[in-house]
Length: 413
Ligand code: PMP
Image (cartoon, rainbow, N blue to C red; front, side, top):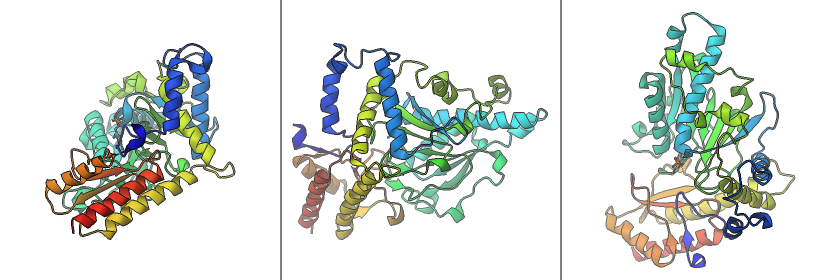
């Protein structure tokens, strides 16, 4: 049964049981209408109310500026997952960059366009994938690897190289975006605070809603919902008005094509999605509803006077992750934490069981499963053990796991 299991999957990931209980009811009959939530029109008043509730909850939780001016931010719901946004950010930021350039200069644009740079901080598997997608779309010559953490550590991820080693593009006018992944789900690396950079874009798929975010430093933030926020099917993007019409001029698709730059599909086009309040095409309203319920629970536990109201969740995430890391550090003869101490993720705790052989890790996982501690296998690309400590993992579940880790370490000595 659900009660007998503590689940630490990396995504899809656990959701609060009360939300799922309510979800099972609304699937059959939404608000006593006799119609299930996945059956109602995405343009119905009910769907609009769900959309508005989820947007306003997110605004309150993360203190997202609301204004039509350039200082405001839009909240968009998209499909295509986090990976879809790897492409969307490139299409959009390149169009904004070229739009601004075309406004300044009419002549010699092809020479100017050769200066386009997309700055990527590669600190783990997901930022690597995002940078590869950028190179696929615009050509590797336009992608500047500001840093590649593997080069600082035996070819493996696990640290964030110091900023004085970064090679950011010097001329701000050339930088369409500076990209980073706030939390690397596979490698267990999390930025302690946002890096600096021109037109900052962040992937927060795996640490969304786990701590306050300095929204105003970012041009855009995105994240797939299926970890801390909800179910697979929607991606949330928080996009600054300053990079959307009418505050920013998008490049004409004809011009982009002429200069050999990509024109993206309309369903990934942020201005189109923003203009249509995320209802350009059929939006999976059930996923938006789930996210709204998860957010409402966070709001209910966070004092109104606090802004942003996510501080309670941050304290809980810190408490759980510190407890788990302290067991690992306390048995450093048995366990080896993968990332450097300074960049350890609070969300994905990646470690190896010493002894070197896969058998030791298999034994760890088997023993864990015997106790109902599930979903602990590391990502297939790196192996090892990964505890995903997302918001819906209860303190009691983390404590149970910590006890098991103590026991397992005791037996191996
Ligand atoms: N970014 C991060 C940080 C992720 O963890 C993931 C998925 N685990 C993605 C992007 C890709 O998301 P999706 O599978 O929804 O495309």
